[in-house]
Image (cartoon, rainbow, N blue to C red; front, side, top):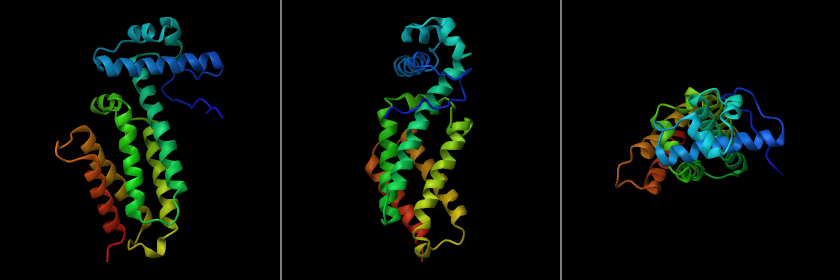
Amino acid sequence: MTQPFPHLSALKKQPTQPRAIRTVERIIAATGELVKEQGLEALTTNKVADQANVNIATLYQYFPHKQALLSALMQSYLNDLTRVLNDLLDGLGDISIEESTRLWATLGIQSFRQSGGVLTELLRSQHTLTALPEGKEFERRLMEAMHRFLIKQRQRLQVDNLDRAIYTAFHACTAILSQHLLEPVPYYTDEEMVDEVATLMSRYFYQP
């Protein structure tokens, strides 16, 4: 089944008709292609319109400025990543925190790598997750998914306040992985960093 077009707060107006949806998707895709090829500084609305093969007036119907293009691009990546990670966490059975962390951290890194450098450019230019409404929603939905997973094994967890522990663990892990992805130490591999984060989570929640 085709996924419905997600609400993107960066848009001046939301597309409702199939043709308009395809146009907006083409514009967002063109923005990503240009960011990857030329970087953020060289990006202009005229270049995006040319790349997407749309009239500049059509682009401005949905994207009032360059910032809106970049925000919509970031939001589209966050929506996809949120959906994938939520499905993963909700589908986990009775496995350890260490193994679950290894799964979601690996998936998150893979999604970042598959963006072809677009996410790197966006995050390095201060378009951080929490700067967008979708960034807050991204955090909220993932922490809720973590809560649904961890509550099933609450009796085994050695933390006093589960909500506070999830908040702390989530932000610690995302900070470590973001640092690894944006400013990597050359001799630390993705697999090694995933192992470290998984060990950190296990020791935090199962501490004696």
